[in-house]
Image (cartoon, rainbow, N blue to C red; front, side):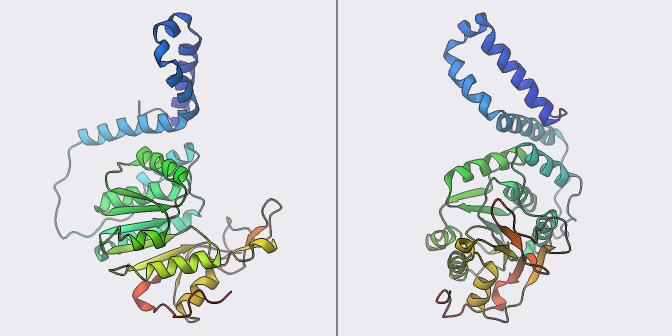
Amino acid sequence: PYDLPQPAFVDALCDAMLRYMTDHALWEKHRSNASIVFDGQFNLGRIAAEYLAFFAEADEEAQPRAPHTMGTAAPECRKTNLPAIRARLDDLGNHSHTSLKFQDDVLNFIRKHAHRGEAVIEVGCYRGGMTGQLADICAELDKRLYVIDIDEDYLEIAKASVRAVTNNGHVHYYHGDLPGFARDRVCNRPVILVVIDGDHNYRGVVEDITALYSMNPLPYAAAFHDFSLRYAASHLEDIRVDLAIRDSLGPRVQHWQLGEVAGQGATLRMKPGEEDSHYHEQRMPEGVLLICADHVLQRTSGMQN
């Protein structure tokens, strides 16, 4: 079954369900299941993804495993698996809303610095487009993944995205925000990277940074998405990830760019859109990464703006 393209498999499921629901004899025979089938037709993408993932896992388990060798260097990014994972997430409508370069930059950093910790944290999962990829690389590297979001529905969708591409036994989901996560001391492991793509409002980012620096042990690094994001609408002018970082960690904060640079890539809009007025400031990076220990949280953090 896993040899079928997922869209074709969804079509086959649709056809089977329609036959089931319109065949009077079957309907009478399985009347008790009718409501389940009816509800299921609205979740065909998720059902198909989980079904295909089940057979893919079974196939992988049937293959002979190479003996584990201690002390060997981590392999390069798996070029063959990653496109398949992204394609499956795209079929679900759960692709990442970051650029491919941003995704690659984050995954490559985790791989390169895997020795620095035991876990990765994602703040803001949306539909799990990045979550699925993080779960996959964490499974490969034997790391724990913590996924944080204030929206319970998004967490459920992210769970389905993860199950569609890998196992989720190593993934912990937290319904809340990073300040609550840190306060509850959910993770006491050394963290390689915290990927922050949640609340983009100035004060929300400041609170996330404050929570980040309250964690013990201090995570090795933090990645921030939408560093260049701006809005022309006056009621959204407070969305400034860049200012929140500067005011929290000082004007000379040292960071490395992640993803596309506005004006150089094909994915970043530089003129306000009619539907939501968002755009990206020219020559600014899509995201940034900083080494946490290189900076000290400013006492005046969050007092401005």
